[in-house]
Length: 77
Image 1: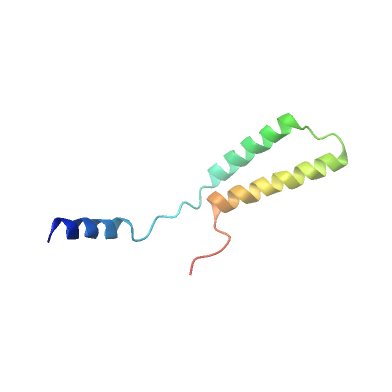
Image 2: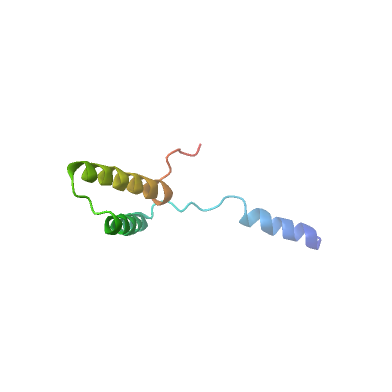
């Protein structure tokens, strides 16, 4: 086996199927909390409308980090 063939065989073994990084629920919670607290420190909600908007933004952040680290939105076949 030549050097080129052995390098290709090694690459084929390591690059065939990457590991998924899903199921990191502590990272979802930590990142969501950090970003929500950061947003709250800049714009503290006062009225009911402010609280609804902040709640929608918080839900968006939780959904974003859940999709990034929790589980994929679209399953693999």
